[in-house]
Length: 473
Image 1 (cartoon, helix red, strand yellow):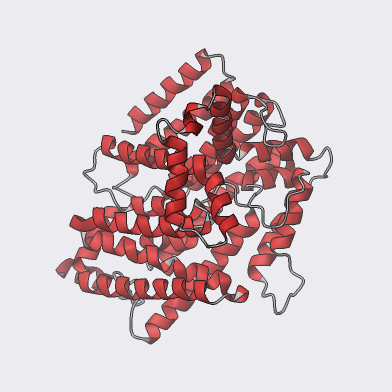
Image 2 (cartoon, rainbow, N blue to C red):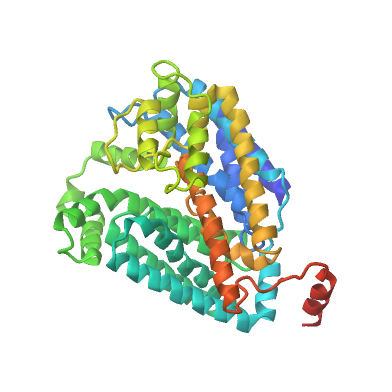
């Protein structure tokens, strides 16, 4: 399979190069295709979390940027600030080095073992799933009824227990997985409709799909579902601007479902006045808007244009701030950097004066460039990939005691980390606090005589006995 994937990717490279693309751009597009095919091939057999990291990065940093270069400058702010050769010569090697760093440490991400162990410990798995679902739903209800800013992140993490419970149920009831997935996606989509933000819905849906496919699923069926997912994403990106304007202006006085359906009808109903009078310029503008949301490259290119021309290299200062913000407790260090510092860093590094509450991030590769320049960023992104791989290994071997069940918990640890536009401060902060949260949760469960990840609970020096017990079961 890997040989076929490599051959297809090579054909893509040759085709792009023959179309007079820069050779580095051709490599970037071909590599993105390679990662996509590898990601798809692994679905149902193992958890393709490393490929997912790189897939998001390559699509937002390479594919989106390439589309933007082909379209040209169509917006006064959201355009590529450096030429294609300069940009791709930096980003494409960076993405490849990121992938190499991730792959250096081998991880056991088999889902087949997970299914077998869930079947052996069905009653315990069901009990855990029910408890997690109750905790997650309770947190969800409380967080929307009582606003306590100091507990916001705790509620955020606890809410994610809902999706961990859902993945349990999908494995426990494989014959009902379609209904379970549909109910979960409907719930998640409704939440997104209420807020007007859909990014969390997209990430959550992908994590659930990781556990949807069986090992016997055909490559075509996986591509089909991914295509449906991309089509859904396209529609959401197309209408979400107008939808947000409606619900935010109504201030809760309109049905979110009705509002979304109305926007869809306005956009897609044949014979609608908006549709029949739309011209090619409007269509092009819609495509540009969608690609702007896909393309993280314009921000990276703005960093390359602004640093060191108007802003000196930061020489690791934002990385130090990220580590301090995650590790140091605020009650002991009240002056430590926080969300405002991230906003100030974005303004200084890009030269763009965004308002408070605007959702834009530097991306790790952009932040590394701002600190160390191109070559320093390559070294940094390589070690960043290695760091993420070490963290996942720590989660599996230490937090999960090598139990395959811990794979269901990766959404808790990696939910913010997976996003390609996220700056390092948010990444480190989420990782550190989610690990502390898991330790605390496991302690509480253990106090109640419940093992949170029960399938391979081991006593020191008793490993052989546990293995024998699993075989006998």
